[in-house]
Length: 262
Image (cartoon, rainbow, N blue to C red; front, side, top):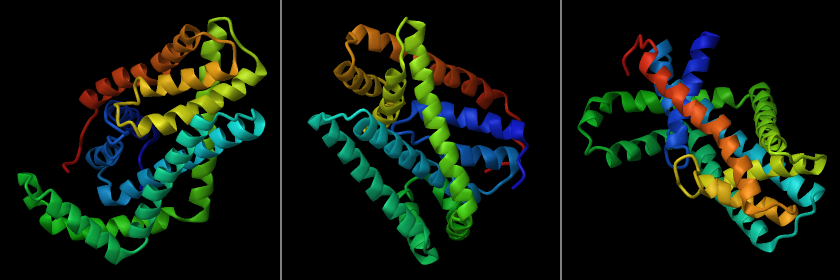
């Protein structure tokens, strides 16, 4: 597919805005819908890319949080380790099932068929009946395509880089209120990954509240910070990485030029 960089950027920001407002980031598939409406690419072709992207995001956060917390920082908080282990187990099960289904064309068709029957009460689904089989075939074929080693390696490196960058932004928020240090940078990077992993499972839109609670509990256990200190840095980070995307993404959703129908 050949999507201009500017269009791809707009679609990503608009999709991120919706994702941030939906439980467990369930709005992510909107990006495939927007690609269809803006560039004409089939949803079944682009959706596997989102699944792989999300899987590598989870893997990157698990690796970053695990290595930084338990190897470098030597965290030994039993309750925290329990939550971390539970989150890893749930994500592993979800993605193992997804990979098992998408790796087989017949299993993909059966799963899409079950989804169609579950949503058959929605009037619009009847008009999509003839396209569901084609969608399943494209979904499976694209998943196999995106599973190439080169694509996976680039995706892994980008995912790790993005979540490390998020940790640096959180650290800069602490610097802005007069706190810093090399160990804090390691801790904020671990905190962002840990809090996101757990917050998504709460099904709160954007993990609002739950992410901050995990971050506060984690950082106040490692440093002599007050709850107010960590909350202030968290809110500043939220403004930079959450609310700005929602505002800009909302504007893009309204102003983007949609050339194609679903």
